[in-house]
Amino acid sequence: MRGLTTLLAVWVVAVGACASDPGTPGEPADPSETTDEPADDPAPDDPTTPLAATDWASTPIPFVAYFHDVSVAYTIRWTASADAAMTAPIDAVVGLANGRVDALTDLGPIVRLNPDGFLDVRDGATYRADAVVDYRNAPVAIVMSIDLENRRYSVEANGVQIATNYGFLAEQAQMVRVDTIASRVETDGATIEIADLVVGPEWCSVAGQGWVNLEFPAQSGAFRVQFDAQVPYDATDAVIGLSTGAPAAQADLAAAVRFNPSGKLEARNGSSYAASQPIGYAAYGIYRVTMEVDVAAKRYSVNVAPKDEAGPGPRLAGDYAFRTEQNAAAALTRIGMLAGGNGYVRVCNVMVWNY
Picture 1 (cartoon, rainbow, N blue to C red):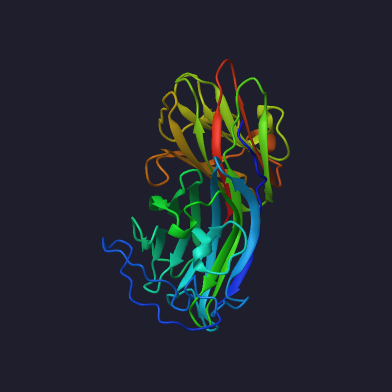
Picture 2: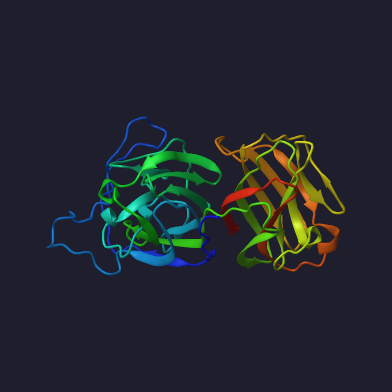
């Protein structure tokens, strides 16, 4: 089993202190690239123009070291000015670093809210994006999947893949660990909030170890769980689900997804397993599972897609009921898994965030 880091939920607030001329970068969908930076970044080798302490807001996160992959999920909320909530575009960046952040060049992976109102992502020396996502008018849910060994990363925004296998900022080509998330706003009067931060390095369950589970911040309302799952046979019997406390039996899982021995995926609906449509699985295939859960209503939905496909994939379960034994569950705190027989279930990149 690979290393396991506890999930964490935090808030960070950064306030822009000065106006800048953001330039005119193209929209992310445009094949042309832009190297525009926030305008008042000092040159990295210029010791005479240090950044003010309030220019960057950052917070520690559970560190993940070399040879480990890591997923970082968070929600971006902002205001363009004191009297204009999320409507006008701003100029801001959010990125990951190893240690203190005093300049843009301290960041490796970076997502930018660009002045045209769209998200773009740093790929080495340039900003670009594989798809257009307009960040105005609503919070944006970001998932960054990072390959630390090769200094590459991919980004999803509101379920849309906007970057695939992009390179770290060139100055961080030797980064060997991630332990900080930082943000900076260049637009005068604007604010940015990084909310619902969750860090989940690879974590796997193997048959023969019995139940394996991971704790996450207690969720009592509406929230989303996403993970990648893999089994070695097309006739495996394995279950992955959410519970209150550490599960010791399948009856402890309120919401659950099952790889059944017939080669199909199914989800628990009250007293039995069912599926909104047939979805098969293949040996050693990796599937991204997204669970939308409403604890108060005791209902949930599930989508499943091969990991290398964009989007949430087809609907496996639509508004299914919690397992009958869990009708009184007031909060969910763990994801647990179990594989039967000689098989195993491998679960990686577990992400949990509310909305």
